[in-house]
Image (cartoon, rainbow, N blue to C red; front, side):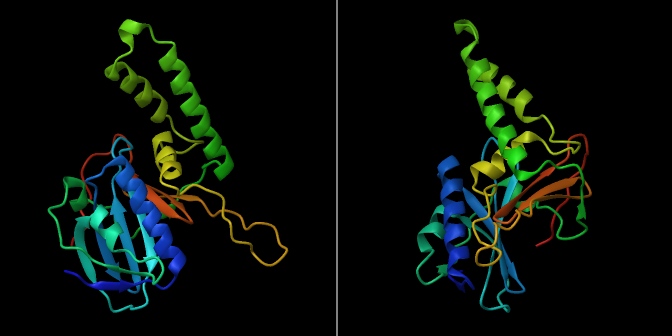
Length: 230
């Protein structure tokens, strides 16, 4: 394909580079699906073990660019020029199964009951500490990968507040750099702007949105797949 994309903001190019770097940290062979249209680029990835789709968006200078392709995350990162806020789209690759099943584009409705960002970060910290304590308490003969996975699944499947959002989604958001304090000031001398973290639902899907990206996943117990057409 080799299309050249020009970002509207160099900071968004840098944030996209950081996102790709984190995906590659979890999977050196990671692939991402790119969708561009209307002056925006959406990058979808699926870090192993979290069982969520991670989504990072960036504004483009040219609102006529349209593409939908799955590429190597590593090749996309290598082609990204943060200084000039550009990237060249690598050649397409055969995508993993998840790349054909994306959240719906519309129909998202706000979901109440989500704790604030600080409480969510605290819940992740407490869960990590609990996992370590329970792992260390295991007798030697039970300290196996299967036993650790059972502990992890029990901890990370707990839901947040009065929502159906599992803790693993918040863990993924924090690990990918999506759940962090907003650094920009509302105005000179003003306090930090509040972090607009919110939860949405559309059909069987939940989406945790933050200023730095989103994670989406299917709600437990709801069958069927929502396939986003190409």
